[in-house]
Figure 1 (cartoon, rainbow, N blue to C red):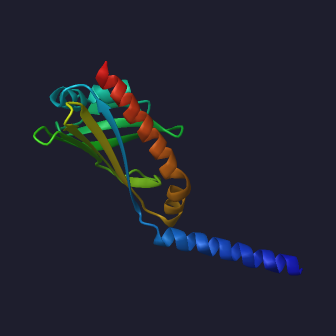
Figure 2 (figure 1 turned 135 degrees about the vertical axis):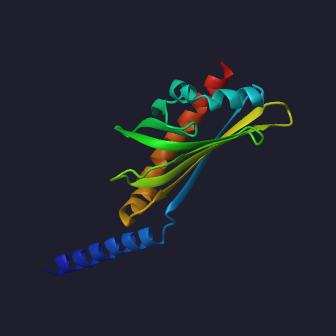
Figure 3 (figure 1 turned 60 degrees about the vertical axis):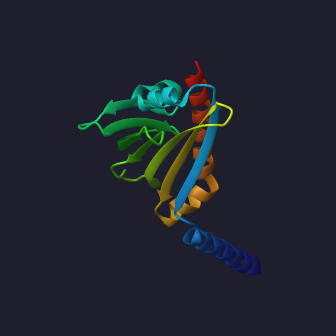
Length: 173
């Protein structure tokens, strides 16, 4: 009997600490990955401004369809054995060599949301070009915050690193 009381107390403390951890965890996550290529920045910008480039270089992007206006598109992603189509708002800024696309609509039942991607293209002093991809998202519920800190963030980090490495290969060919 004493064993079950101790076990109950330990389990209660464990779950209480997990809930406290989730409560105090920042709901916003920013991940970044970078690749260096030997292609001029204007060529890189033009290539990445083309939505078909994302399908050709990324293992998680299944398709990109133009939306009702030039700044909207629907992108279908396959990640963790799930396929989701997300309406995205696209901003191209050639003067700053920036491309930004962000989630334009909520996904019912999704663990994360407010997803935005920013690609920054910089010419380095040696003439090479740095392509930096920043992915930002929010985990809304306590459960998704907890899962984000122990599982989701790691999986997204791996997918981002693979995508950026593939992007570098795609740009250089």
